[in-house]
Amino acid sequence: MMISSGAWAHPVIYKGGTVYWGTFMPQMNIQRLSYSFTSSFALEFHTQNFRSIDSYRDYQLGANVLLKKWLFQNSQGNLYLGGYAGYFNSNLTEGMAYHAMAMGDWESRNVYTAASVDSYFYSGDSAFRYSYRLGLAPYTADMGELQSWLVFKIDYFKKLNTDLMVTPMLRFFYRNVLWEIGSSLSGDIFLTLMVHY
Image (tube, rainbow, N blue to C red; front, side, top):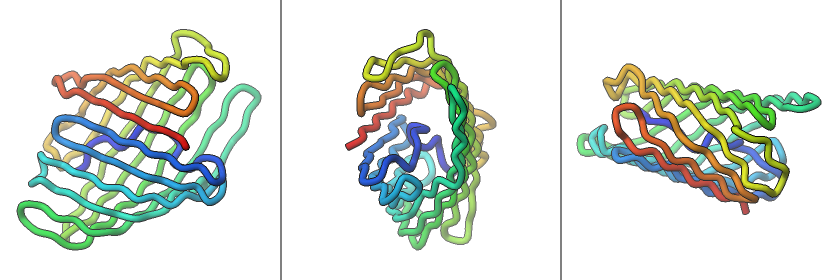
């Protein structure tokens, strides 16, 4: 049922941090607002609109938890879990919706990789989405400088009757703003914007 989630940025940031992120494609729009109470727990509100699935829209509140962090000399890894509940409506029906996710990532200053599984339950139906990313930095940037990545993203979501969506993209991070732009091999434009406050 669902297309790619947000920016693959960490869903839990430093204590007291607020994050807005939005993901935009021709057939969908996901927007999230998150607040981290601790460095391992964040509360999040999000709304998702999927025009290609009977104009599905939901409004959910949930939590993200940093379950485990691995710190190495020049890299780090993270494991996150999230759960959400709220209301959805579509052209066909409306009611309660639930969403659970698991995400893991590993990154250095030159390479990052991330994978996630999302499950959605609504109106007696369910859907599962699987995503994977591999990113390479063409140069090593210092903190405070523009960071650039070449990213290859793969999504699988049977509910959309698409076997795989492959999206090459460019990812940039500067100070507290992250943005991504790309196009799937089938021509769907992909844009993400994330801002830390």
